[in-house]
Length: 118
Image (cartoon, rainbow, N blue to C red; front, side, top):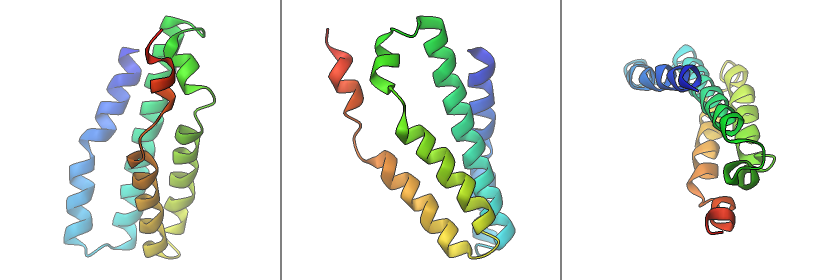
């Protein structure tokens, strides 16, 4: 679990650098792709950390039951996977996909409220 969490924290620590690069390069194609790669790698780190916690607590744990198939997590990975190559075609469509991920996670997740109380 520690290694998965360190992987996540490493990629999250790079976010300020790519955001500054985006700002200084006026949203260039390379910076937009790098932003998506860093966020995609952070999403992979989050997924690995989540799976490590479930592995430690068992498949029947409340977290495992709450997540289920984790469509939100898989959707996030798919959107980042599509947005990075798309940034070389149209960086504004890639940015729109990045905003879609933010909107996806901004909506409150009711999965945890279902299993929070025994």
